[in-house]
Length: 186
Image (cartoon, rainbow, N blue to C red; front, side, top):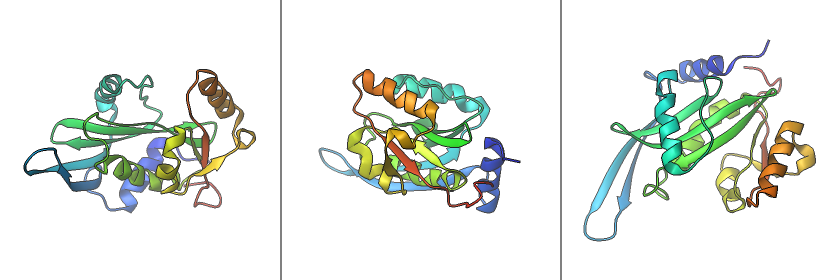
């Protein structure tokens, strides 16, 4: 029997010996225009169901249309009480689809997106995974072993989604990542 998204999240947290649900503590110096260096601390956590409304508000502020649901695993990067980034791992037709990778405007290019992506790896290892990123982000996703895929290599629901995005004029492509679990089970 296949594990549910929440079972996978619990397994990743327990196997890593994580405190509460913190996946990564991220400290990076950010150079600003003008004098001084400002340091940001962020924690990447598995968002709880009660926090999904905050993620939905964050997505809206970023101009992203998708909304988190209880059936997805949502990873969130927080700095104190501010949400700085989020990504969804959606379980659709027995594969994982990485969706909604967003970093708060003004915090891009500081490593938070890369940290969020790396935090996804234990979850992505559980099953065959896909994403439909903008074409300029291919090397970003290759950093965690996604490879460009042809539409013919996609599940039908994802091929249809890709075709719709392309018809809307979005510069996206398909990427695929093999499971590290030969049986595809957790």
